[in-house]
Length: 104
Image 1 (cartoon, rainbow, N blue to C red):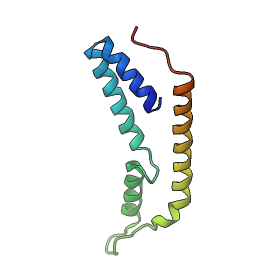
Image 2 (spheres, rainbow, N blue to C red):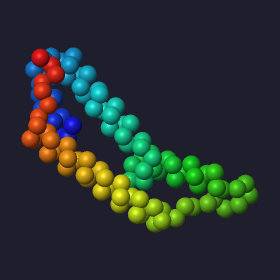
Image 3 (cartoon, rainbow, N blue to C red):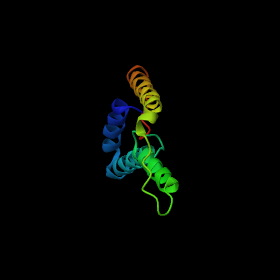
C-alpha cells in the first residue's frame, strides 16, 4: 500500500469508527518501525549492523576499528533503487486498482 492507498484506508477506517482508525494507525506505525530495522545501510538497521560489526572487529587494547562505509555505496544504491521501484509500483497499483474497503 502506497501513500495514496494508506490515505484511502485511513479515511475509510475513520468513517468506520475510532477503534478501526487507531488499529490502522498502529499497524502502519509497527510496519514502518519493522521496515526501518531492516539491515541495509540507509535504514537504522544498517547502522546497527555496521556498529555491531565495528564492535566485533575491535580487539582489546587496540584502537577502535572503523568500517569504510564508502565500500557499501553500491549496495546502498541498489537497495534505494529497489525501494524506489516498490514505491512506484505500489503507487501505480493504488491509483489504477484501488483496494476494496475492508471496513464495510
